[in-house]
Length: 172
Image (cartoon, rainbow, N blue to C red; front, side):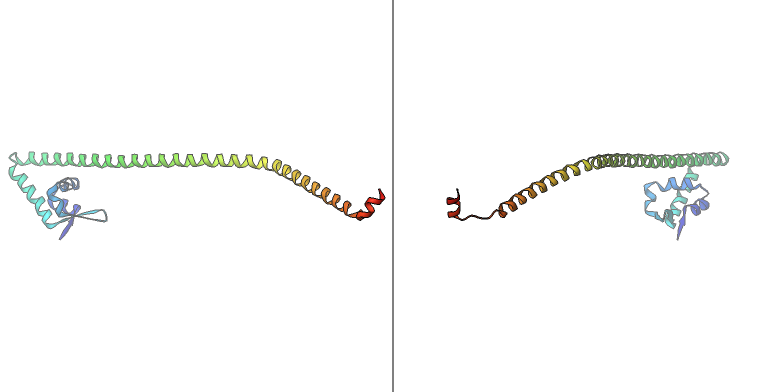
């Protein structure tokens, strides 16, 4: 049979934090299973915890009231230490998340700057484009004009009657 940490804490009259602290010891690793974030302890692990408590109680020579008070105080200290550890872990996680968000914001900022530069370049190109088109059109019309002039010249030459060799010699 397996038990949750809450059930074990009820059975041995210790806080959950104390049980978690005991479970951190290497001798308990083989008796622990974790499923979906819940820690389970096998029956052998429960017996080991109980035997640890019996050993502790057997070696405790102080009167029972003081022992109970010191147990309570130790439990509270363990609980406080456990909560401090949890708070430190949460703080580290939070700091890591903040660093990741800062990195992402820097990345987005850099991308935004690049997009802004691209937009500026595009605007400059669009401003210069009509001027370039006018120059290209002027050049094109000049070429067309030259071609028409060449064609007209060729047409005028063709209209003159062709003189034969002898006519050219004798008419001059």
